[in-house]
Image (cartoon, rainbow, N blue to C red; front, side, top):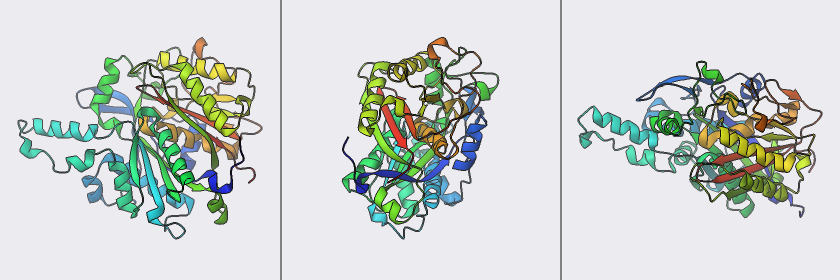
Length: 417
């Protein structure tokens, strides 16, 4: 692999997030290491009580209540995490970058479902008289809405758009941000994913119809990837945005660097609407490794996509096994077991939850493994308790989605330039 110049190396210098168990990176990391679940129970229209992950964060810290009411839940989450990421990077005043040279790239599993469901329900209270349909519906439901709400809040006049990549969307947006920086289209990128999925009864109803909606008398135990008693997906909301910069600029301003994005890949199964396919996932991981110039043995953490469905977990485990079976220094964990599945935000929230392993040399656990499925067994699966390693220099993050979309990103600790 050719050596990249500092102008072509992309680093993460800021993180803003809202997860079901924390509203900032430090607390999030602490809760992940402690295995503290963010999954609770909600009473959903037409569905009833279901396990779900709901975010609690200061919704009016960066935007007034009136603005939140006019906008969307996704926009509210986005504005919060975008501001937090810029503050974390020391770039909140845009004194070192121009707003017209800043790009906003948001990964979404879906958008507009919540608003449309709410409008139809509202109409049902008025005999389905469309005179009561909100004039805010159109701007609330366009796919670029969350990215657009962020630009309006921050005065960003560079490009903004959303990337629909099912549950691989967060990683896809991160990749897009890096590519736009490498192309010179922007000088600064806000990239990540947002999910407001818990507001949609349709998502829960569809998973239920597929036999893939997790249920448990204790909601904190409902999401249990790799466990024999797993029975489906826990839907969560959440958001995470990274500040991405070129390495030369980050070094010039003495920025804190969380890690370097050294490899990434996306591909398609081209097989089924819903069912995942391990061999294509393995190809995606291998392509990311090739682009990073790394061998499987060089990876210290694999953060899995596993959602707690039987076939999905097994397909991914088989894919990992095909590449990493002789890698004694590679450890495997899962973040969804603690926060649920945050859909379009899943990949980036899960990556963020592992980034601080570069500082503390710990692998956060996969919780709720009481009876490990033999088909998901690995010697280095970090189950129920965190694991401290001698060193952690690389993280491989898997994120896959419906209609056969796969994404992988690899982040490396900054040890030298």
